[in-house]
Each structure stands twice: as C-alpha cells, then as structure tokens.
Amino acid sequence: MPSRIRPNVLQMEPYAPGKPISEVKRELGLDSIIKLASNENPLGPSPKAIAAVKQAANQLHIYPDGAAFDLKSAISDKFGISQGNVVVGNGSDELIHLLGMVFLGDRSDEIIVGKPSFVRYDAAADLVPCVRKAVPLTSDLRHDLPAMAKQVNDNTRLIFIANPNNPTATIVTKAEIASFLRDLPDHVVVVLDEAYFEFATTDTNYPDSRELVLDGQNVVGLRTFSKAYGLAGIRLGYGFAPRSICDAIERAREPFNTNHLAQVAAIAALADHQHVEATVQNNSQQMARLVQFLHDRHLRVIPSSANFMFTDLGQPAQPVFHGLLQQGVIVRSGEAFGLPTFLRISIGTPQEMDQFETAFDNVVGNLKQHVGSKSAQEVKR
Ligand SMILES: Cc1ncc(COP(=O)(O)O)c(C=O)c1O
Image (cartoon, rainbow, N blue to C red; front, top):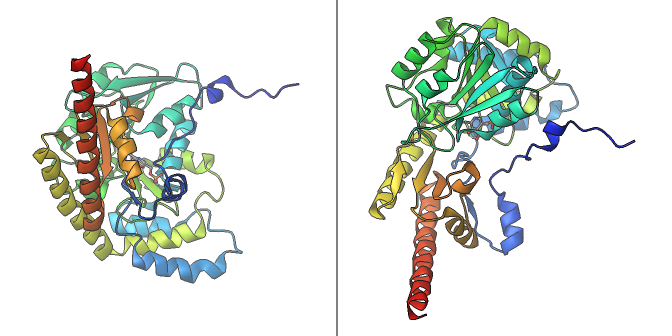
C-alpha cells in the first residue's frame, strides 16, 4: 500500500536558503566568494562564545539540560523578565514552528501574516490544518496593520509581524503597535519577531516586545542569537511570552531542543557587549555607505532598520543576482519574495562591501550594454 503523506505537506515548498559559499565555489570554480544573502554577522561569532564552546566540547557525551536553566536564567537576568516568561528553541525558526503547533490545527483556525514577510510563518501554518491570510504590505513596504486588523475574526489565533520585516527591513512603530493591540480581541496572539532587534533599537520609535509582555499584553516576542550575536550555525533562538504560552511551548517542544554547545555559546555571547557593539557599529557604517552607493545610482532604497537592505533595481533582479553570483557575490533576488525587481543585500565588512560595489557596477554596466546593443539591433531590424 502506498504511504499516505498528508496532501498539505506535499504542497509545501522546501525552504530555499541563501546559496551556501561551498555550493557556489563548487558550481563556479571561484576562490573568493562573499555571502551577503542570509543576514549573518560579518564579524563572525562572539570570541567569548567560541571559547565557551571549546571548553564545553568535552561534555558532548552527556545530554544537554533540556530545561536550559542556566541560559534562561542569563536571559532573565539580562532583560529583567522572569524565567517563566522565557522560552528557548533551536533557532527562532523552531519557536515559530512550535507556535504553529500550539495554536493551530483546526480547519477553522486562522493566522494572519504580511506579504511578503518571513517565509517560516507560512510553513508553520501550511504544516497543519488552518487558514492563512496574507495581507499585502503598504506601498512603502511596511506591515499594513489596519488592513491586518480588518482580517481578524473569532477564528483568528495568531498574527505574525516581523519587526523589522524580512525581506523589506521596515518596522512598525511603538505607537502603531500600541493602537493595533488596543483594538484586538483577547483571543488573538500577536507574535513580534525581533530577529534584528539589536540593529533596530537605535530608533526610539521601535517597540520592544519584552515591555509588552511585562505589561500583560497577549504578545510573544521572538529573538535570536543568529544575527547580532553571530551564532547562526549553532541554532539558538529565544522568546518572551505570557506564562500560559511558555507553558504550552514547554509541553510541545522536544525534550532536548537546544543543545549543550548552543546553550553555553549563547550564555557567553549574551555577556559579550563589545562584540554586539562592534557588530552594530559596522552595520550602521556600512549601511550608510550602501545607501549612498545605491542613491548615487538613482535606485529606490527602502529605509532599513536591520542588517540588510532592500532596493528596487527598476529592472528584473534575477539577471543581476546571477551576474553577481558569477563574480562571487551571493545576494537574494526579490523574485523569491514576489517582488522581482528588488534585491536584498546583507551588510558585510568594509572589504566585502568593496567587493560588492565593484561587482554590482560591473554586472549592471554589462547588462545595460547588453540591453543597449539589443535595442540597437531591434531598431535596425
Ligand atoms: C524575521 C526572521 N525571523 C526569524 C529568523 C530565523 O532566525 P533563527 O536563525 O533564529 O532561526 C530569521 C532569519 O533570517 C528572520 O529573518
């Protein structure tokens, strides 16, 4: 008898991450490749985290602390929130998945997401029976909170807001989120995904999910060690939530969902203020430079509150993406996000941004020449 995989699983697309460096090296035979495609930390991991991992390696034969007590207590101390309001996961990806498991599962359950927004919200919904409502962003590529509010009904379980949003890097403000929450019925849980929190906090209008949870709002805040802390490879995400939601996630998660090396790395990274500061500083300097570079080329730049930039090339981005790849620069084309003229560029080191700028001018210059000679031929014909 053939196996009976659930049809909604077969309809899902496997996650397509930014191309790994090793794959591009193999495919194109290039030596020097830079990856500005997954919003990672260009300065690398926190040195304190590396030291902690090295030291913990001789404990690998022992199961990790499934409750992640030391890590939760470090998070609780650092952010001034009780351990009962903290959850940790194998990346915030896992926490997104767990929120889907905890809140969705009936055909009538509804979830509201922005379009485009972080793709893992779609996956959390598509894995289980429920209705996913995707609300287009505004013309300035921000979450359209009033339009999202209009989609709320008795069946709404979850609303996901990436703040800053991925791929657009835009934010919703403190005032906007306060008014949105004020009008929501009690049964709706709002997830504020703050994966890029450390880069966004320079803006005084940027809301903090932790404060909303402390204030008793029906809000889950998600954060990660993958971005400003430079630990994407080890997988550690955390969240703040009302106790009842933390308790539900504790019941639903795997017994050892965060591993020992990830826990010790995260504890060390939390205390490495210097590394986070250097990361944020590099980001704002190289961001300013990239904005200038793109403005000089008369391109529309979406104001970014994260460690990546979304820009409209005014022409299909896919050929530019492929051209940059040939030059050893990996970025993301907006094609995947339904915005085919946009490019998403992660902020790198000064040297990486040098390489990006040179490659970009080569590629866009070549494409222009190509289009120019093509239209000349067309005129001749
Ligand atoms: C908005 C957003 N949320 C969550 C994640 C996932 O982060 P993690 O590495 O913690 O799973 C990302 C990663 O790119 C993201 O952009």
